[in-house]
Image (cartoon, rainbow, N blue to C red; front, side, top):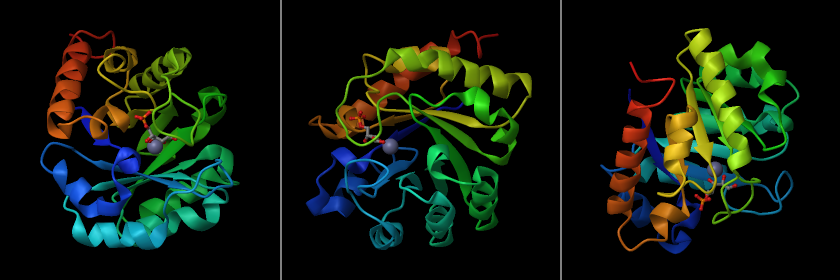
Length: 228
Ligand code: DX5
Ligand code: ZN
């Protein structure tokens, strides 16, 4: 079973963003870019012009995580400029299905993100419009927060849904994912792992990615949802 590690550049040095992205080239499957608007979340990072510039400079595919209000209006633009995956929060969209279709119409993968208080059961009807479900394991807004283990049942519920319907939808976890927590995520059903501080706040980001990948792979191989 393939799994993916997506380092979050939120914990990288923003003064050397391209170099920081290239530091993990070849080791990371994706690069997770957190877009925050100081409205949907109480923090401000970067937006479309910087994503567009990164896309021109960086070889690893970009996984945009939009923590912004009015996703209906803004999310498709990230796909239009070439982000390979665009994830928006269902709490910030009036019509999540339509936003997913708009993103896919530009050739990108569409992801739905759920805050910790948001139930996946309320979005079962629309999941087939998506290529990925992002389950937040912290309150969105900041890197370096503690992992919320109470979100693991939601990861498991998402995996049950995808497995029962035999869908090809990735399940991503984001927030507090580290060597101490990644195995629980994989065991519950995640296959795509965002890690910010666990990669970029270490002296050797490539080694950190290798360690995370090995831990996730072993936990996946013996998990309820993947083991044969
Ligand atoms: C938080 C962001 C995360 C953040 C994770 O709202 O969505 O992607 O970078 O950081 P860590 O891995 O340090 O919890
Ligand atoms: Zn994120």
